[in-house]
Length: 108
Length: 120
Image (cartoon, rainbow over all chains, first blue to last red; front, side, top):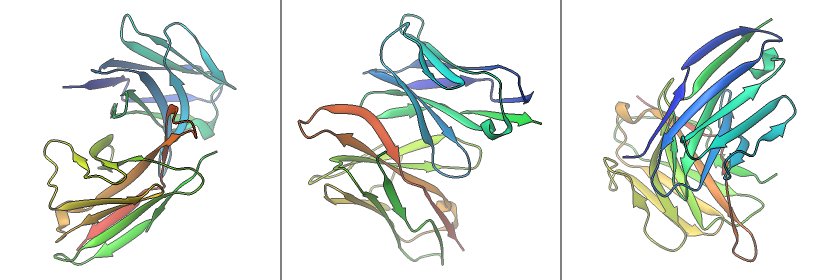
């Protein structure tokens, strides 16, 4: 059975802190690892990672994939209150298996 | 960016009635759409894969007669919750996989806004 495990499940930080979210996976037919940010409604796309060791960046967010150790991390630097959300990672090919998410709370 | 529209965003119905939720890809064709269910503070659980022009593929434990999926066109998939019961109350989200004109699969999923179903 495919499995995606995220840690920590929840995290509370202060504005300006840097956070690292973890995602490990055991997925058959793996092609890519995706990160999403979910606020009140549907998830919004952050990154798709298919190659090991290549960091993807978007502003204060960055992510990297390790296909040998089967994990990915999502880094957020200089956090802001608007970063508060559930961050989901998902792995697979046509079908994605989602982790339970990390609830990030950024306090002013 | 690509847009997926889901309707209705919120519905309340009586126990025993049926509810239809629509998922439309507005600016791209989607031969494959996915339907998920999300309980409070839980992750997205894949219910079924909807393929245009063919029967949906349901995940283990999902009743195909209860959750009817129809993918009649390249831009529309519908989920009908039949004979709804209070335990069917949940947040239902669809996603669509975008294909480029040459058939190249980007692997990127675009999500609808979700539909919150409350069954009384």
